Length: 294
Image 1 (cartoon, rainbow, N blue to C red):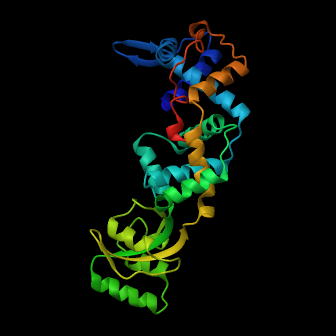
Image 2: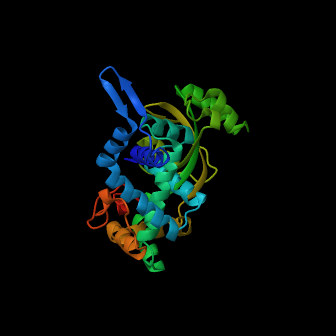
Image 3: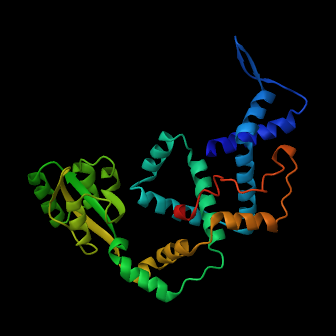
């Protein structure tokens, strides 16, 4: 539906500009498709949902502000949840779905707006947060790691000795690692949560302290030398994340919040085709971004 939002918005704009005209959009041996026919088809099929969605976004954006940092943080969270480790990989995934980075950022901004709206006024106590941390600590812990991947143990042992002799990890990763996705970044894998890597790699990485270097770790991909460059394992490390998780659990129903915004803003629909737009609840791409997506 996101693709149609942009398309219909453009077409609505064209109808205002070319109200007296009816240009040809497509010409075929079977006949023409005029601009008016095209606009009418879009309005009839998608207009109600798109227009409602546009109104919701306008109302949300008026009441709540979202910074670039908040959008970037949410994107990072979504990348972690989907095991996407780099911006290049993210862009590749989006391109495969026909989604541009701009559209994706706009969608994420809407998610953040909905989160703010549905959690507005919701309180979370320190006790609730600490209880959540104690219950979920094992799944919250993250390590930031780099690795050098090679095919055989002999080569891994040679590289490990070079590292012990003081040679640079990033340079060795670029020279020897067979992991094309990370070798030119010094082997950097970014932040890793449990469940994102194969078992042997995970067991080694999460048992290591910050700055520690592993011996060769065998997996189905070959032999890894792992370096843990940072760790997050304390309550203070996760306070913000925990608060958001609890807010999600306590959030108000999305449609209830959107209906209230419509009432507060005295929305009047001028197009007779959509005169009942807000008289009944209609599932929208904004409204369907329910608490589970925040």
